[in-house]
Image (cartoon, one colour):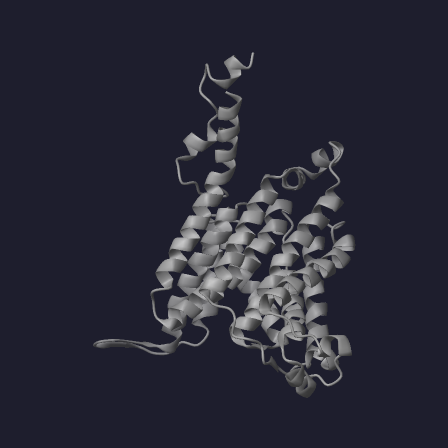
Length: 357
């Protein structure tokens, strides 16, 4: 019966993750048969899913609302650009780039991994002091990181081109190259939240005083979560550069921060399923609003263009969710292939417990 118990424990771990992966893969496969325009929307959504899942690893498990994760995305984008743009193009755009970076020319995958690693190193440096803060202080501190990084990227002309654009990145990102990264992020996020590190951090989220009294090093657990989450945000930044083919510092500031936080809040801050649901819902809703912004011709009726409708609509949706569904669309629960009562319940009476006596 020990084998039965082990199988049941593994099933309890894997079913929600398998459900999320199958749902995401099915959606991407369906979109893959649609026109190129819809495929680009799906690719953009998968990149944002990386940012949202990365943010969830820290925000969802720690309970600390961070506004700084898009700064990790920006760092990853520029690190990847330094590594994948040809030396000839870099010589034209960034003539003062250090020789080590000027001569570098790696594959998009290697550059994406380096982008994630660079974002994690930066997260470790800023996380050492920030992880000691809680509540609104930590949120303000994370926003300060976002503002500082944006100011540096926008004005460090010799390294980033300042307010200008970096071009020459390979057109590498599509739904099939970004889907594996999204699935890997989901797998790691689920494994982390089920690990002892995630359990300790969620314990501190629910009752910080009790967790500290039980021996949980809250500062260390927050730093670990921040470093892990920053990796996927850095990779997302690299993929975003490959997707657009050009990098501009302002792309990694308030607008991207607002949209990713909205996705996480609408889906549900405390569940990985909520992160996925939020990306799907906001992407679909935003696409509808974007079409309405441009105006629609419905036979005898014509809807004129309404600039700014997308931002207003997303803000209204977020406000409605916060009022009527404060825990998000998923209510803080995970999605499973089988009924929750099946995979949550333990072995029936007379099973493992009696045979282990």
